[in-house]
Length: 430
Image (cartoon, rainbow, N blue to C red; front, side, top):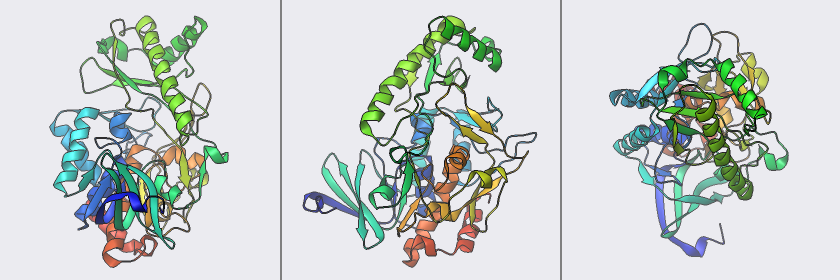
């Protein structure tokens, strides 16, 4: 912080500061603003949504897999889906691997919905602004220093929510975490893409097993396809299919050089999968690439060490907690370095709780994390990172941050019972 102090061009103060405008950050900002807080949201891109509008087109984690789909998240996310329904830009579909129904939408439409909801709630948006450092007073995070086109900006707040995905604020503040740089196992990265001019009827009649067989056969004929499974699915747009097929493994996504190489490799793979679809798969004979994900999709980078560490046993035993602030029924879905994906399912229809303590970095005050940087083991993370759960964690973090700022106490001193009641009032299913 000291090296920046003389170069600060302007200052912004608020009650709750949210870093990252992805699905977790958007829900945190909306929940905090609706709780009466003055909220500033800092986002590095020029739009909201994060992975939900940059990379993916499907909300997973809303429903449990199994014989009966049970809805497990609610609140702000229901408003988002309702807005998509008004515009006829959403559909519900089964997951390719039985991981629970997904809610597929048009990402460009979702960008405008996130933004409109934020503005209506009174959230102050700061686009094209990148966090550079955390501001700490003793052990408390009181803000951040960020860079924008007009220079350095100092943001100060009563409570800060790190929804950056990569735990950038927590790391800068001295929180401990697991990462690839420290030798921890991390999931692979994926560049997604969409193709148009697809004969939808013929394409959807290609069974998953047949697609996997064609991939393996294509590799024998010279196609470079590191992943021999994955998903390509219908969208709300006629003749447009979305693909989650590429795999870039063994990457530290917090290393800019490795991330640069991954972006290049992900796009190379995407073009090769498009070639495979065009040449080998019925219905794709006239397919053309219409877009690549804005950036490569990162599943896992830093996992903060929180007051509680969610484990594989917690997930598979469907454990509940007294401080549960969200629920999850998604299986462990590990995109490892191989050509397939490892799946482990909960008992049929079961869910587990996500403890509030997983949002509280150890030894750091004034800060909550929300989304995929929560406190969890590699295996537990492979379940709880689903978009629906990131949104639910964001909603909980936003309400807790507003309570903390209003009472001038630390987030870990928030009355969890009151927090849970307020979340239920918003429609959360806990």
